Image (tube, rainbow, N blue to C red):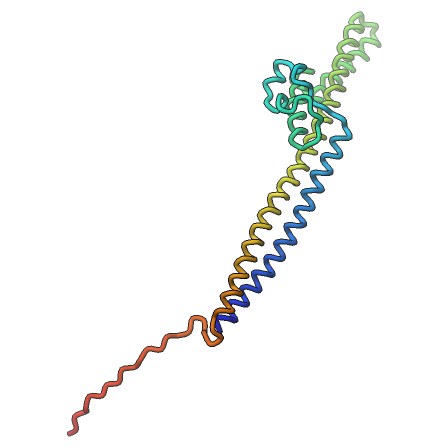
Amino acid sequence: MKRRTLDILFSAGGVVLAGLLLVLGLVMTSNANFAKTYVKDQLSQQQISFKTADALSAEEKQSACLVKYAGLPLTTGKEAECYANDFIGLHVKSVAGGLTYATLGAPQSVLTAKVAAAQAANDPALADLQKQLATVTAQRTTLFQGETLRGLLLTSFGFSVFGVKGEQAATVAYLVAGLLALLSVAGFAHALRTPKSKSFAAPELVPTIVDERPVPVG
């Protein structure tokens, strides 16, 4: 095969691949922009703001991100992660001594049964049992609301991560596409400078040594 033909084939292939990577980069950029805009719009509608620095408690001030975002509106995935884990997560743990909405279900059921039994038996402990049940019910409601909001914020954070990853993938695609384009241009330039008659990896001709010594007769 001629060297010029080979250069042109490889260069053309590089151009095609660079074009495909460029299209991939544009698609990933579009997805990344959509993720950013969507997360920002959804979080802005919640109208959540971080507490100002002077309003933070001693425990809250131990969180670097709560101090960093103090007083700002919550509009990004990273801010949603901070608010969910370092603010809501911190306060949810103090509602029922570390118990969750799910684990409070059993105590609530037990107290409900005890209240029903006390009512049927006119037990003097009814008032105390009703108070305990009201406390557990209120705690469970608070935990449900807090854990639900925390889960929604973390979902928004997770969606924003896809946008960040898409942006990174687009950057890599653009860089590789640019590199391939440069190599293809160099390949075409080399093809134009290469003589048409030059072959690629042509076999070398080894000169044959002919033995011209006289052959004895008789």
